[in-house]
Image 1 (spheres, helix red, strand yellow):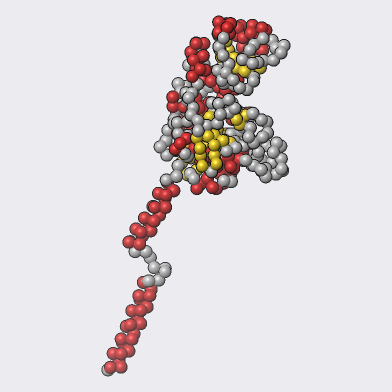
Image 2 (image 1 turned 135 degrees about the vertical axis):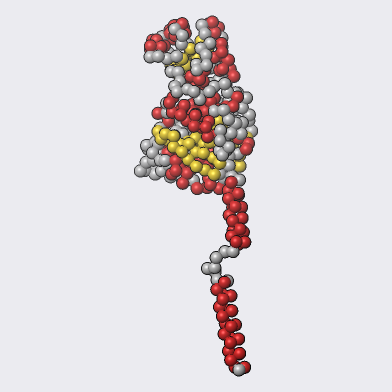
Length: 377
């Protein structure tokens, strides 16, 4: 009898150990309590990710999206062939500083950015920034006309959230490609609290510039974008350093709106030179120009022949603005130019004067009011 009891006790103990071991197996299901703890850990990880700014990259093409079979060529390539997702994948480090996603607006060389594209881009930027889920915008763009698009956004987007336009001087396939570093820095600036309220910014070559003052100054060099007269507003050396403020009106303080526009007035640029004539003004008027920007010599000077053509254009209802081909300095209002309603671009170069004049003409054709716009913006 004792032997039987002993055997039963051993059998029971063995079964108990087997059962206990199975219940503690690594394959056992989590208890409700364990599930809750796991969910809390996941939520904490998600919360940490959500602490990063949300940046939308809008791609338009350009050299930063260019490619060539040769890794050593920096001038022979096809612009606008790499898509936005590939640009993002090429710089995975961006995901450490922001929640990044991309959208392809167009994919062209920036010489083919037209008024229709400007309106499309401007409206899309405005819509995205109106969302509480977007903290900043980066626009990738070809460098040839980058400053024009940047200034257009500076005048038309009603938001104090950062807008950063970025490009590169070398294609993505070059061994010395500057695009990845520029893009990373652009995302960093777009996500910075300090960048709010500064208008549209241009980031290349470790510099931060205002769209109002920056211009391309060299055909191929990576340090081509400069703000020679007014200076950069910031630099990037791992961290972001802002050291200048913008005093001109921009973004949320701008009077210009494109929300209801489907086209912009035609504004042409004419270039002053020795032995120029009045016929270029006549041709522009005949072609349907509503405004003309004249890139004059020195302080926006016109030859006698060119001035005759400009005055005829004004009498036919075309607004004429004098800018300068020199690259720097303020074009002043003076003498007969004022009497003949030949306006002054202030410190805007011809290509940016064209952007402002197009927008001004959507509101008025009064020369005095348009001159005020050039003095204020």
